[in-house]
Image (tube, rainbow, N blue to C red; front, side, top):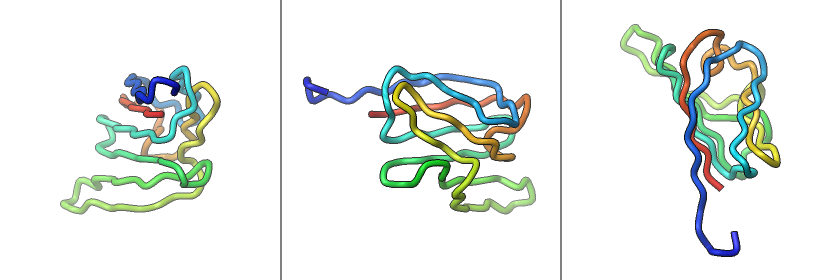
Length: 102
């Protein structure tokens, strides 16, 4: 940005189980997603490739799993980002919150 500032947009959505576009008004350089229903979170930032993300999943058995996926994750777009069909982060009917920075 010309002002040297950074933008941050937060939002909420319900997972679909299919790819989902999230508009934020700019191309993000970093995205965080928190799925409060499924107890997991995911993050993407430059220079990760499209459709990638690091995710943390609480399995509910006292174990927390960290993984890096290269499909079904986050893909930046000119005016927002797409969340792929990851079965943990974008599960159907689960409540999610997101934050995107430029």
